[in-house]
View 1 (cartoon, rainbow, N blue to C red):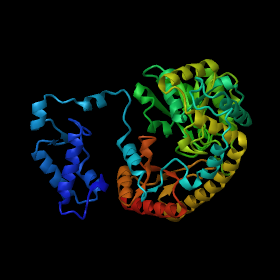
View 2 (view 1 turned 90 degrees about the vertical axis):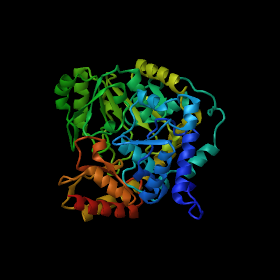
View 3 (view 1 turned 180 degrees about the vertical axis):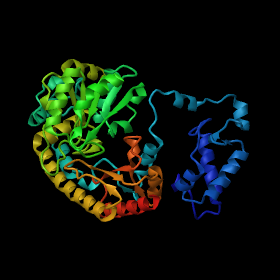
Amino acid sequence: MNNQLDRNSDIPLYQQIEQIIKEKILKGEWPVGTKIPSQRKLASIFCVNRSTVTAAIDELTAEGLLEGKRGGGTKVTKYTWSGLASGPALDWTSYVRSGIHRPNSLTIQEINRQEVKKEIIRLGTGELSPELLPYRDMKTILRHAEAEKLTLGYEEPKGNRYTREVIKDRLEQKGVSVSPDSILIVSGALQALQLISIGLLKRKSAVLTERPSYLYSLHVFQSMEMKLCGIPADEKGLDPAVIPACKKQCGADLLYTIPTFHNPTGRQMTEERKKELIRISKQQCLPIIEDDAYGDLWIDGPPSPPLKAFDQDGNVLYVGTLSKTVSPGLRIGWVAGPEPVIERLADIKMQTDYGSSSLSQWAAAKWMESGLYEKNLARIRNKLKIRRDTALRCLEAHCEGIASWEKPSGGFYIWVTFHKPLQIHTLFEKALKKNILINPGTLYDQEARQSIRLSYSYASLSDLEKGIRTIAELARELM
């Protein structure tokens, strides 16, 4: 909306803002009952003083288009002459509130809005920087499309057979032995979790996961009224020894884990603990979702094999993706597990979207089969090492004495915990005013009020230095 203001016009800015909001109301973009952005938010959107926004809101309120209530914000109201003449208006707000899928937290919604701004330094973004994405190799692959393997129609329920065969070969290199019939192609790892939540689990199930965990930042399971139960973890990963007691306490039906380059802590589970986790999983009849989104992104040396490599009983559903290593825009991932489970998830997926993009599936297969994937990984690992080491140097220079962190041996993240209490959301807001975007630790654990997830995969080296220095300054002020 900011771009709609004409600062050279004779029409005052507040009247231009008034007209923009009025058009959104009259065109039905903001229907009756819609809670409009706060005055502070609108001032930020339009890049004007708050008093300018207040003047516009006052005019619209006087016209009967808006109504403000103490503690309830300002909402679109039906009390206009046109509204009274046309009868009751459709209340879309009630529909929005009644949907079963919970909305993102306000902080995540704000992060999603801010990430598109070019001037923002993104210290929390969990994806590769555009300069690290393999545009040239992707063009080469698409330019040499083979007609006999590339189809533009719908694929079979589990996904393109050729692609599943290539993924099978790729998993064998990791020590995971599965057949193509035990693999389902999905539109990214997040869809795998969505399919599992609605296809395998009943409402109000309990799910064990590390604390902190990426899963706490999602509402995939919570939207099905499921309970997340945090289990302790240290520098060696989650502690399998506590699982029996935790399972008994909350009646857990499933365990979700990111054992390799964990999100958000960057840790990796030791091979000994992986084997012990598999043993306890079998003993407790506890299925496991292994999220291996970052497993190929090692920096200091290859990690131990995935959990699935030690699974001889079909207890592990293994989730992989190309979003972190090739392109988030490709939207291709996979689930490997027992064939009956894969068939169930495939049936749910067909009901949901009738299969992932056939073009993306073909491109994914060509990436892995052609040798370009390994070549790209080598390049990415070198770049990530430079970025990680830069971030660590900046932390040592600016955060020594006020925070602690661990050196990750792969992945995207460093978990930074400040030594003294501070208002983490205030830190988030103050940083945002300086065009720096961070991910508060409370997104991954409500009790992590002194932590942030620092990503070194997206921001440039100069932005990493500037961003970390500024965050340190703000943190000192708040502490």
